[in-house]
Image 1 (cartoon, one colour):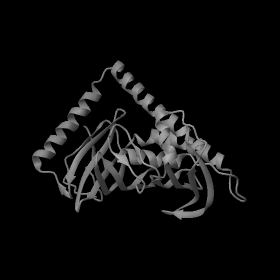
Image 2 (cartoon, helix red, strand yellow; image 1 turned 45 degrees about the vertical axis):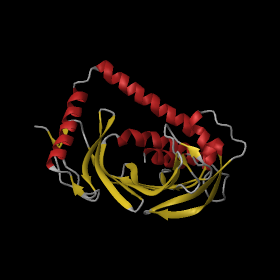
Image 3 (cartoon, helix red, strand yellow; image 1 turned 90 degrees about the horizontal axis):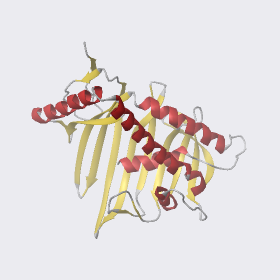
Length: 286
């Protein structure tokens, strides 16, 4: 699911098209969206939220619910429910112990170790940005219209691969194997929605699985506290092959209950069942 979300964000962050009468130049939209992406990323680290992962394949449906928090620049995922049911007390206690241990480890981290970890994280982000910077050269973009998405007016932009694209970054080799459509907000130039389709088979990451044509990803964001855009829903129809076995299924990530969080807070155990329920409330240490 991380790979799916990553692809959707990258495609939506970099639209390009010819000038259309009565509409702004797409390159200006790109510039503003990239600037807001950087600012948005910094603010996102101040939020905790609930993420519900659901898988459906082979006639079976399963789900997991997590409380997700950034601790000193590191994402921490605390499992709170399986298949809509709270964890048994012993499992909940283990998760709480992991949480307390992580808080203590980060709080007592040396300056050198923290600086190194933050530098490594920045390197990874710059690597991702290098990939993103190739997207404008990889596609032909067309501004096709305007739509209202989740209460926000947006420009609709389609992206189709260019035949003459030659990737510089190794990860960018997948770009010609994808096409997409994005919805860019007209007031703040932030991507609101994206749809990505695999049109040519490719292997992703370190996995042996090959994604086949027919794999479709759609992505929706939501405005939180009138200051930041965060993921709301990611849906994936997966058509893949693992070695000699075909694998097809539906996957979704639902994000909710975004709340400001500080490292001086502690999460209390909670019997919440699904993402629609309230997560454990941050309780400041006294």
